[in-house]
Image (cartoon, rainbow over all chains, first blue to last red; front, side):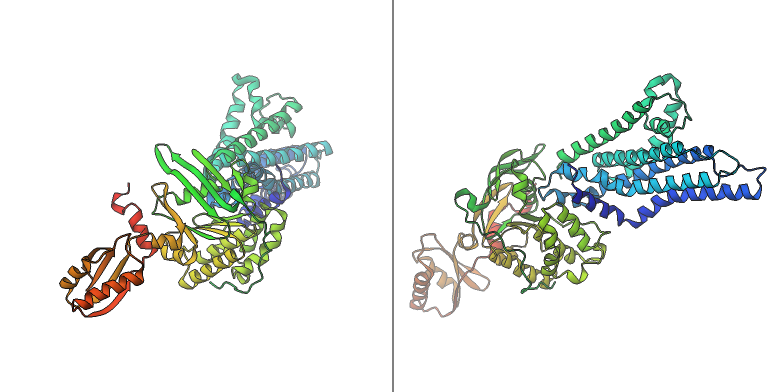
Length: 252
Length: 332
């Protein structure tokens, strides 16, 4: 189901989209550099008014922000991996080789990961280094906090990409997928998380699970760590299942 | 287009002797495909022998592309059976398509990749040996000098050639080419014609779907004419051309008198004025050309009619096609 040659081919197709890769880096690593630079300059110009740019609290804020941005990047890269061949008509020629359509689809998610996960790791590294280096009088993030934050960023990249690839296979085009995922991740999911009458049902929101893994408790939906992990894995499995089913059954 | 006639061939094909049903590259029986109430294919019975160029011709909407999509497993038939290179479809699809190269309508590519990178992507979906055929394939279609340019800078003709190179990655026993002449200039068409014949000479089978009947007549050994989702005739090009009504054109004077003389000859169905000469339509029982022409001349000369020229009418595939398919005004 996961063929390394197909995954490398998928990675090549994505890597060569220089504009998309540049945008993904700008939205994550670039944004992290910008935020830490601005706050560091502010602190240097007026330490009495502005806190140090680093420290644990700022690290958690940065991770929370980066989770959102990496979900956005995952939506862009994943929808491209999932729909570009369908939109261009290349998928028809690939399917005509007799190669299993599930194998062709199965290469798209890891292919997207080859772009998104290094970017997520890089952005996480920038946030961690800056938070420690610029902590000043504040408590620097511990190794455990950095590991949890980095792990959450990687999971956000993996989840965002997988959801986008699955939905893109379903819709057959990038635009609706990106719009849907941005709406869910940036607007609908945060609103649902604040609706207390939903109770523990909010645990299935992927954003809440990611916050739990990153040790961020902004909306305070109590979730056990194993449950949070299961929620992420469940969403990825669902995305794979939907995309694989659609890819296998559609006429092209 | 500049195809290298003496370019090194791709890996030699396995020369297995095929017998019985396996001697057919494509075999369909009662193959049908419906889209709701509309039948794209009613019932296609087709036998394409191995090692020939086979034309598949029909008017727009006759079902040519649909048949190719069914054979490639891109759509499911609603009835009938298919067999490709000795393998049943769809059950043995992977083995059947491993040695099949295809261009379906216009070949599609990732335009942000180079020609070579597009072939690398496609080779990844083939067996491991396909990667080793990228260079010879590009060379064979004359694209090696532009292999590292992005496909978005290619002309339509170059994309057609890249599509052919992509087909060759499979070292194909069977090529299915759907309108491969689209976008090619006259020199490109000529080169493609030679390339297809070279591929056939190497023992490969080429299924050529085209609306360019003249090209099919020049390239193919056999053809099938499809209309309204059915094969209306199938056979060698020679058989198809000679399967219509025979006629002889005679340039002479005194047309009215000559018509009367010729109509009385045994084997003549009718003789009528046609484009400043007489066209003599023969019955199916008419003797061979040498005998009937001699008899027609004798009657005319005996009747005092001066004859300038006698020429049997050579039927074209286009004429046969038009007599066997639904006229444009009757198509729904």
